[in-house]
Image (tube, rainbow, N blue to C red; front, top):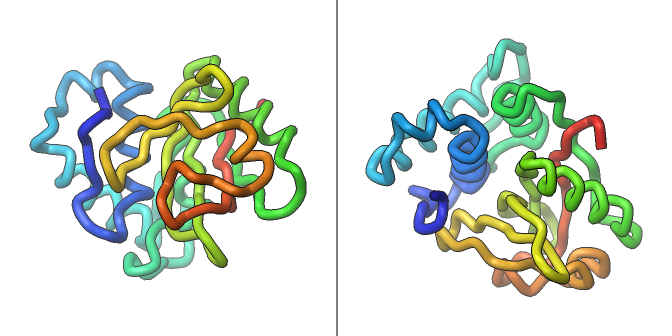
Length: 176
């Protein structure tokens, strides 16, 4: 359903991942969408996520040129999934417990946005399902669903997302 959907510009990976999450979580929403409407839905959502209000809460406006702030992504996921999501920093440490949280969440059908980058977070992907030896991840930059290995995630040496080799933040259900 989300394979082949690519982000419409260089700054919309976050809202692209969120629209994909909503497609997976909300069958009624998915029934009203088509691949040709994806770009418009993404760009509309990006404006909302970076404005002064997002999902019923006041927030500091965020320059769209810098992508999507993690707190706005957590609010959107909370709204779409019906459970509270929170942002977890992943940059330091082994990430073993975070891997277990990601695996448990997606096994329950709760997709999780993941910020990846190099020296700074630069790209948002969506963890969508467990896989043998890793996790299935939607990459809006290519419109693909690829497997990210457990070892690459826990060691912080990702190979799945091109030049973005470090996990930075995971947006997870608060119950995990």
